[in-house]
Image 1: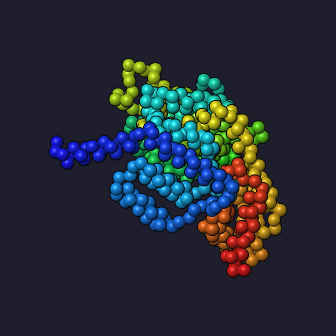
Image 2 (image 1 turned 135 degrees about the vertical axis):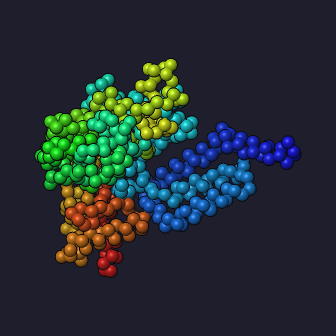
Image 3 (image 1 turned 90 degrees about the horizontal axis):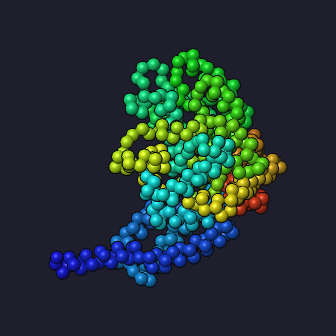
Length: 506
């Protein structure tokens, strides 16, 4: 090796040693701790903007600039700490601030910072899970949480199965793949039948768009998604479902599953699961429930009744990264019958799964999930539950749902706002209808509300979302921050009035 090659090899080794140095990690972790503590203190006191808005092209250009800067002179010692702080500050200053109590937007919570500390343990040490021996403690943590949450939801101890996967969409896909393979036993090996009526999926009319995506990915086709009518509270109508299933049976159309919601995304409607379960059992059809958002309600003494009948479903999902307030992504799939846990995927991988230890297969999560390399997603939930007990989740659910009721009351009391439903959970949909909008078409009122919302979030004063209801635009708040109190709701209505006057040119 030449002298130049030796120098290059030595420099490469120095960079690697610097990257993996425990001492350097400790120094940067202290900077990280200080920055995040200051950030959370500032954000929770609403000292800045909720959404740090920049146009996409501006953010991409800046991210690329920082990458290019990394190609320059090697950074070491004090320079490394200063550069790390610069980059970390940029991450914090250009993102969404979910911990600000004025964040009342998507169904994404400000996770408990303590949960984030536990989550970081798995991230730094890369506790991956396909086979038990790669992530033994991560597997144990997941299994313990599946047992505890499943039993809380009413499943019989030791007689059900579950898994954790990356997000509600993947959780729904996994459960519906299982349902497809049970309803169409040859589908995994030979594909869907080429003759006869095409299999159908019957779903809540307001089901999350991920359900239609699942139908496409499962080979059913999105046109085979039949949307069941809703009642006056936007819940699936059990009588209409019964009629649909009876009609499909007469036509000889196989039904892969019925998909109910607890709760549906638009207004947070919880289906009447006991009645829907009765219908599905009568027709011998698999019942799946998307309880991604609502599964946490079981920890509330006053709201757990919304989930009555959930344990009768053949499968259902619950997202811990929603109403259990832990970092994304941590989605649970539950099966009423434990034997169904291996129905989604029927394949062999001898390089992973050891035939000399067949009992270990029950703990090899790679047999049950789309993911082979799966991150340890549950450390945050396990840590918070182990520190505070399950009662903390009831506290969080009640704080946010009670907040939604108070926001709804303020809307009802105001003559320039129109409530569009009575909230069952923590989602509130409404319209701002001041004097300058009265008498205009519903479409015009909806368009004006969308423009008011757009200007408001760009201002950084509040963050809320929009939806369509009754064929027109509406404002939609999901009270996901347990630190949001009545003063913030009152401030939101005043901010909407203020922006509304700007839109009207008043």
